[in-house]
Image (cartoon, rainbow, N blue to C red; front, side, top):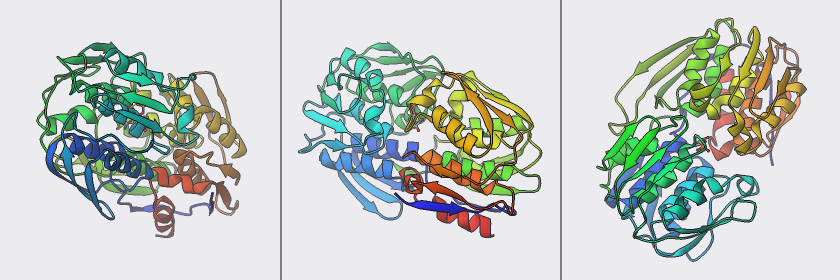
Length: 433
Ligand code: S3P
């Protein structure tokens, strides 16, 4: 574990080119592996999570060649044509790797074990086990419903309609990927629409996907290989955009980031809090994923209520939104956010502990977090708790401590590499510019 010290920011005005989107990079590798022929991926995410997906695909006999820092070429085996791995497939910290690969493996006739680190072993997996079993795959989790997962799939699964009790793009994607091996169409119905990267990228591969927000249908299909330049990761940009939003006169621009409507909740929240958000939309990546330049200018902020579909659209950004809420006039209430307790850490509990150390008053219930602003933050000794989003959210909180009030320490800052290995270097560059 490494420690980082972060001093208060004096002024923020700059541009940050964030690395490629993690969610899209996972899917690009997986869909490339399911296609038949050569796929090229550019500007892929350097996230440790994405490296885990690439390693698992290689272990299943897929030829995946990386050209660091961000390009891949792969020769896909085709749907149902993976090879049995000789060892346990290590998904490390990555829920996306584990849940999406469980869906892919459900369509392959061999046994594989998916496992991960202590954090991943605590996360709920029955949400993918149940639908994949209903499709005819043999899938077992531990008695607690967690990893390791054993999957023994079949080249022909049963097409089905699945009503998911949770709004989860990982669950939806696992079912849609398994549905490629179905004996008929499969439909996923979600309680609220989630990011639709899998649907858009399946279309990019020539698959017919019907979608009406929260209801998605896929038929069994073969996939065409593709060339894709992954857009920048808006979830990584969110840390710098929130920093800019915190003070009148501060500004950050992030060019070429993904603008999938399932992910842009952070921009809606910043606008609702009073920030100036400018979006200049460009060409969609791969013809399917909206992308463009985003610039945020700081103003005086006010508290907001975040609930329902908006909570889902900014689920990964809620830690940094909660930090920013401490700088806003009035209360911010984050509702319908029980899923935060199932992420890489219990993010509601982590926020309560860390925000209090920074001098912020807040309270929570099972599904809700309320933050009372505005607060002059105090320098603190903060712990990332093995969760990448906190390594970064606490660093931004440290930069928001008033000038002269001292440095903060972030323990376990190396967790940032799970999604954004260069984060602390990019933050230092921004703060020095
Ligand atoms: C992701 C879906 C979300 C998100 C995660 C990435 C994806 O998880 O929090 O960081 O790429 O599909 P859930 O499906 O658990 O909501």
